[in-house]
Length: 281
Image (tube, rainbow, N blue to C red):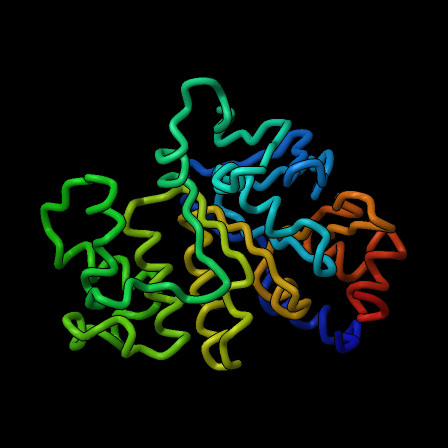
């Protein structure tokens, strides 16, 4: 990891966090209480306590292998799709435990969407069909398909680039466009939370910048939780940051969590400062 000059982080944070933003999200507050996750007998993360406010962006940072992605998948019950997986603790969406008895995992995954590291549009579908595919799979009626396509492609920052290519194969788009198409597909089912697992790691700088702009624009409507190894990205896009660390074979835990500007500029733990500036990890 390249060391990031403190001044650069502070400048990025000041530019993108000039003050309180007007938030329109009425729902989407997430809270993790004592979340612990296993694969078989191997404990990946333990005792995670986090509050992810509605209408905010929360970044999760930390070295590879500290459980960031595993924790992210506990937030919409994707972790349990692995046969050997187990989980303890609570994940509360607007005060309701998504793991409560009788809760429907498929419904939770509609309310808490996911965008993966590698763009994964359906290659046999057109651009427009990809946007509508989540609605079709979930059996959600769609009265005005054209409006749904335009609205969500606009929200994902892609409409102007594909409005004349809606019937073209999704695989013909660039990597950055495919990732934004996946965001539009996730948004079409009206989630209140959007999880992103290193969404820019395979993209060029220009595409990364456009995805980051989309994240900031969406955060007034949808709560966003993003895993990233890019410290500058965390400083640019997030309101809150959690630093995860797994030490000497122990499960991943939170070393420090707080407002992004505070964590990057005045961290409370020396390990946080060392990681941010590339001294390990």
